[in-house]
Structure formats: C-alpha cells, structure tokens
Length: 55
Image 1 (cartoon, helix red, strand yellow):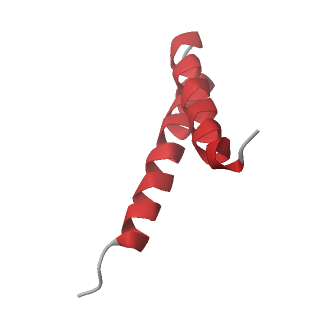
Image 2 (image 1 turned 180 degrees about the vertical axis):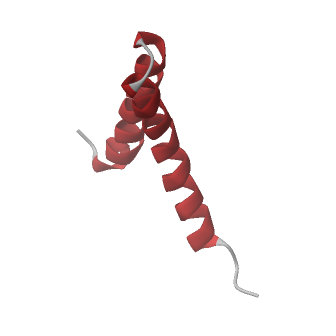
C-alpha cells in the first residue's frame, strides 16, 4: 500500500466509525460519534492552520 493513502484512509476509517456510532445508540455512543467525527475536522484544521501564510 502506498504511504500517500495512509492518512486519508485513517481519517476515513475514523469518520466511518463515528457515523456508525451515531446510528448504533445513545449515551456512550453519542460521545464516540462526536469524537469520531471531530478528529478528522481537527486534523484538517491543524493542517490548514500550519499552512496559513504569516502576517
């Protein structure tokens, strides 16, 4: 497997797990859903923040 697809594949797996947790139930599943869907957003936000031009 090419290393180029390692991070997008991992983020896709975490997103899928978060969506599955949203479907499965309430309580702890809700927390797993929020975590699973927030991790890819945080990673993308961090990457964008690092690439933002300095003022």
